[in-house]
Length: 317
Image (cartoon, rainbow, N blue to C red):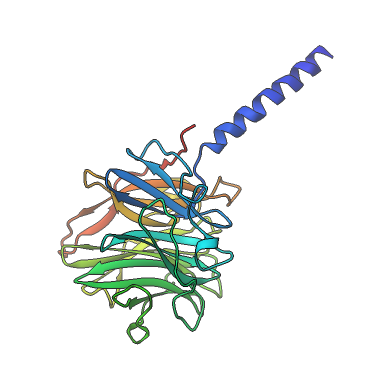
């Protein structure tokens, strides 16, 4: 009996301790990090009613969720959408903070006076589109705003279009396809619905680099590659060394759909999600890796993974 009671006591003691340790991991999919005035803001997919936000001043100690609306930076009562709040991006334009995001498998954009929110829309509506659209990313170049996004049409396919000056609508006449999943690494399950998604773009030495994820996110082979172009509108050429981020390189399953950012020292990072563990997809964990550029004989710098040790983002107790 004594040994039985000891075993029960031990179990009761360690279960809450183990749970508390697990709760420290930040569990956001499709993450993005926005840096502003000394603070890093982390957003992502994972809440049913909108987007919570975590903050850090050093990328190691994360507090939150501490958005202006009970932890949310955007709550569904303030903007378009009732469910499926996915893949936000936050940026600053002409002194105002914007969040572009997915809800109800459509795209919407809200604004705020603070990265903590509340992000709101005067008119709760989605951006125009004749099909389902997800995974938005806004990129500014030469006084134009370009929207990269995914259409759910014969698979998940990445497109680009110009936004109007007020960022409220897509210039539909400017919509162009960027890429879709056709290579072996992009569809290891041989699915009839191939997936390319999660676009993010940067410009380096006159070239545009489009990072994207391929395979279904539930597939352990979910991975990240990139394509390059001389124009933000393409045409895009996929990198011969794809994927640059994968389970083979990082040792964890389901690595993908993230965003690029630089720290205050100029180091380039990619924040992404991975599967919860080797046997469970969700809730997905938030991690980051270092990226860099290196010269090649062809003259086009190669984007590569600098460190094969992903750092898991943790919420401070």
